[in-house]
Image (cartoon, rainbow, N blue to C red; front, side, top):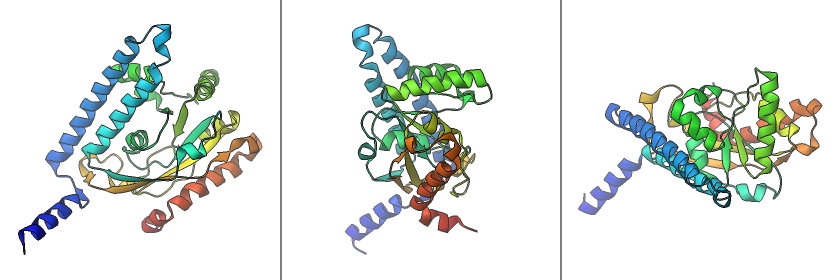
Length: 272
């Protein structure tokens, strides 16, 4: 075999998806924790240095870039290779509230969405994350949201805040399956995201992340795979002004079918 062929073969082998060895897996975990701490501090510092009324209008775009850099750094740590299909900007009608609804099958769903999709995207996050001191402060500063469905009065306040954030240009991202899928199978959708979209007359834009479940099985950090190729697919927007609360089951099915159709090949692979 010629030297050139050996080099090409070696390069191709390095790009093939493979399970990370124990040392690499721990490196990725520690690097991800460090990056989260770094960008949390950068978020707080950016807000602190832009407290004047004139500077406040520039804070959100700056934090958008920080979040993008955080997502990109985590994606690069596992050498994730991703492609984007569809155009979020084309689906997001100007002046409309937008809720991005995505499937959830990996811890890398969130950083990949921040790395791949444009605009001021913020998550509806778990309440538990707001108990972590540094992270909690950074998330609040970055306008990450939480809705307490167990406390009706708080849920009403949280919903009002979510409406205001969307009105100001933030695109909220939610994972309505409720938990991460361990095998890539699309779980039934819970109605929290659907109800929020109806209550706010938002556009729902389905986003399917194909093959992301192969990167990191749920709660199995030491079984991560490197060099995995995934596809982020942006579906057609669904106008929730056409649906009332009584139609939430119909709307839920419509959103589920949109995600399923974009993930059809993956669903066929993981079907029993």
